[in-house]
Length: 157
Image (tube, rainbow, N blue to C red; front, side, top):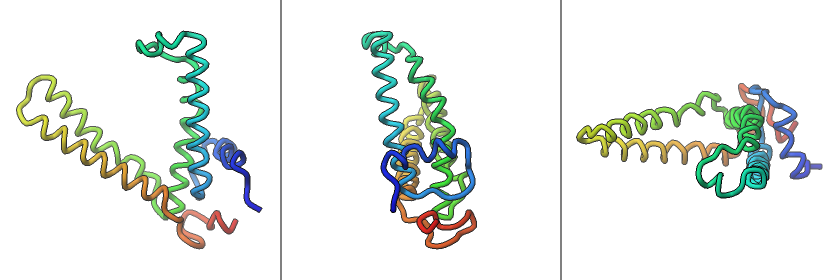
């Protein structure tokens, strides 16, 4: 019998910083739903504590910061394990850093008035979009059937 949605949501918390092995799509996506729900609850708590106007004005929500810090490692670990399930190394998660650096450099160049910086900004944005779609496709793809270099098939386990 398969696990319930709640069990899938907390599975990455049980494997808090485990970067080895493989993660099924259910484990990854239910944890994403869990993170969204917990973040919304944290925002609501910050809104009650500080007021909505303060948050809209840019005040730091301390409950949200605590939740983000607590969920960072399990979120990163489940993403790495999800890539492992598709027989890819976790280092692919750094792929968005390249267009992010291009975007940061282009934004800085635009701020000081460098000619042609807008073209680099557009190229960086396009590249970031392509990389994001590629990662999304990998997260949605069926993992390799049977054992791969990262371990046994989590569906059969």
